[in-house]
Amino acid sequence: MNIKIVLEGKLKESFYKNGVFEYQKRLFGMVNVVEVNSIADYIKTKSNAYLVAMEIEGKQLSSEEFAYKIREIEQDGFYNEILFLVGGAEGLDKNVRKTAHYSFSMSKMTFLHQEAVLILIEQIYRAFKILNNEPYHK
Image 1 (tube, rainbow, N blue to C red):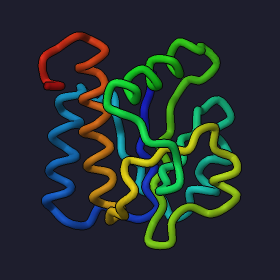
Image 2: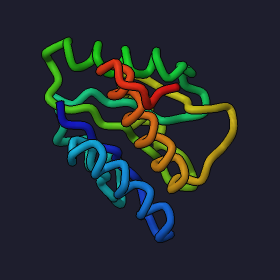
Image 3: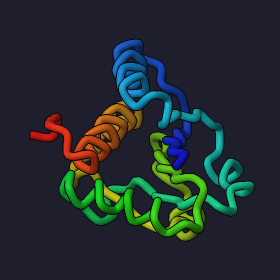
């Protein structure tokens, strides 16, 4: 399953870029970060993608529940990729939120969008460790 974190904006700070790159290496390139000017425009061509809106009002999951959610999407068989949609300073466009298949919140706290990308990719890495019964999780 192809997984992308779609960021409206850019990863600017080197420490965020380095952290994201480290998890991309650990995930053997299975997760990519796509920087775009407009998520709304980007997703118009993604008819077979499962869209996850990252927003504070979304459902909060434990790491285990998050892992099983990824597996559930993969096993569905309909989608060829999962897109985690991370808005910029103004958050996600309301039409993007309506289009999304799922709304997910990492916390009730607000994070910088660059910070959210790093936390999210680490949680995706953790999810794969959980699904493979590997010891990283604890």
